[in-house]
Length: 436
Image 1 (tube, rainbow, N blue to C red):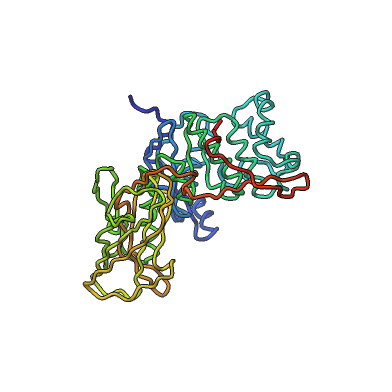
Image 2 (image 1 turned 120 degrees about the horizontal axis):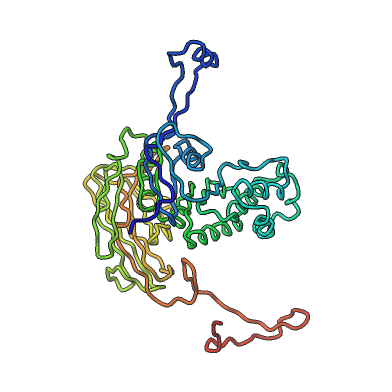
């Protein structure tokens, strides 16, 4: 059964006219037939379908066309070419300040925006206390919005956008101005929207947030959509693009990024990028018994062993690794440069083996191991070879705590008198502790 489409874009483009001089605009009106404007294409040929119930992450550098795309979907911009179809009520949190009247109070803006989004006065009155509680700006709810800080503004804007029962929620970088506790509350709300089968479009420069929240992603660059699909692969394309530009090389993305589908039993696909000069030959995980393995016990001492072959002399090489969960979120990693373990210059046609060892307190689960080698220049870093998701790694065991890292925790208990003085130690009987 085909998925129902929430948003469809077919060959959508947006072009702006830019006039070198103000008088050129007047000349074009008075002397028609000759265009005196330069064309700037903010978007070109976007074809995209977003099924209902999915969360789409939109990635790209500033000026790539992300905000233009969202404004066309919302309807505040008209595309120059193409067609846009939206099935469902949209609530959007775009530029800071959009949609609110700065002279109105927060309370007045709640009702004003709610009516614009199609809610009745009665519905808004029933929802107001919930909106005000989520925003948590206290007495400022009855002060003009122009007196708000950026953090207070985004609190109210997000509260309104998410409490008007939209079928499609659009968020454009707005959460970056909130404090960390409010951001976490927002992320929980977004996760609830996803579980309720709502459609979400989420723009962020924070790739970790994209990986955590989204099940699909697209990459925009210079008005074009150059990648779409699973968030990990799109994030890799973005990193490749950034690395290419930082390296200041005249190669295109296709020649820069080498992708291939080496599948192992765990169905983990490997990708790699790099400019050559050295190659990551192998990566192994070794347990405390000296055995090469892909399954390690929690709290065991493990070693990631990386073999590098250098095709040429490298004056300042450094080697690193990263372990990520199956969403691509980094869990642990380092390199010889950050660890202040400078490597000696390498000779051409030489092999180097680097070992990183630590006590594995990662929570039980499935991970992947990536490794890379780079060259440090005076003002830049050149990626020689980076191999992503080379090796699957499973951690097993029953740790006594929760989180990304299940660390040993010391517990003390003391009995206090009325003056808060310690009277005695209290005994902790592990067998008597039960969860309710």
